[in-house]
Length: 95
Image 1 (cartoon, rainbow, N blue to C red):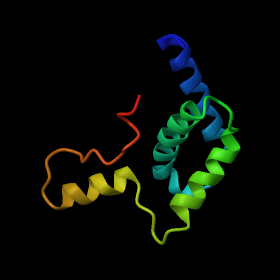
Image 2: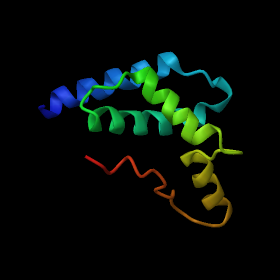
Image 3: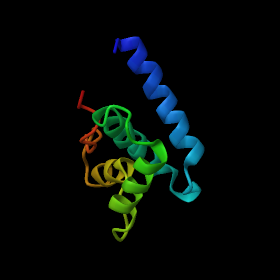
């Protein structure tokens, strides 16, 4: 898959996740979900549906008490005097 094809696919995946997002009061988790869904979709070579991947993500992340988004971690780091955001997403650097 070329870089352009991959970029188009990732854009479509992000759009699909946004369309299916059911937690409007936790939009800060949306970016984290998109990152992981994109990685997982590519990992499974497109054999899993986006809806199934979202369900798996919700089970892993949101059934844990008080889930933290990467933005939550960045705010906490700033509160503790960190001058730059913490890279808390393990999915951004895979590829």
